[in-house]
Length: 393
Image (cartoon, rainbow, N blue to C red):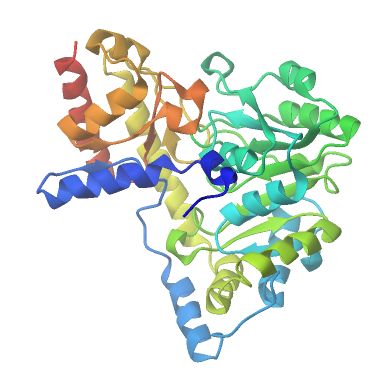
């Protein structure tokens, strides 16, 4: 079949490709430590599972409204109002099968050929993929280690043009684990309001914060009417396979996003939405325990990486990813790229990780390790990484 030209501009998420290669090695009898996939290794809390089973038996097996069931939209509106300190109503909420559709629908609704979209680089790869897909121009905001993986606000201001139709931010950040400060967010908000540019604020890791306090750009004047918040259940409640995310945005824009959902997926599964109600309104103990476990794992992996010659790693403030600088280790081992390093690490040492360039060109010289894995597995991985680096010197 002859594909549309837009398909040639569509990227992918490398984590799933590396996972597939790692599974192939395991099928050959190899032992692999999985630090490539951004997925909590915990099971979904029992109360949430029970709520889904009750919903299935209670008849929640039919189509629902494209924007989501009223009960869940009300629960989300209440939670976002509480956690962000803003007023949110249910008509501002759209529930989607995972968080990615909010990226897809927002970029599709706001950008087209000739437009520009600003996004963090390194950053979640679907941002750039979707910008390219709709024919807009990706304008990267480099996240540099010397700025603790924050971007230069003055540089961002210079890059805003009359063609800028959207600014994407992500805090806590994947892959770097960095967070935008309140001062940075305020400066971004001022630029967005001055130029009347909407902001897609990816806040999927808002509950996974270890250092400092989570801040949302919606707290600043003029931003509730210009911001699309992306959040969901996958990371906070270990519900990756349930496929449920949501967006919070101005009500008139929410109606347009719901229309895109009608055309794309009709709606999100009703019984999973009832589980989402329980997730938000029920006990939060399991979510708190997961964050405490992630913090312990973070401290272990970062200290371990910093003991390996040629590797150094900043302490992530949020999310569950370490983003070590491996430039010296690459040079000693004669690796031309971080992807070559990551491929060899998987093949030779049985540690699955992602090249920094899986998140954009500014990720060269880095790896991303997900520490959403057990302490014993992280210790095993650190030993293997150390031996791998020692071998290639």
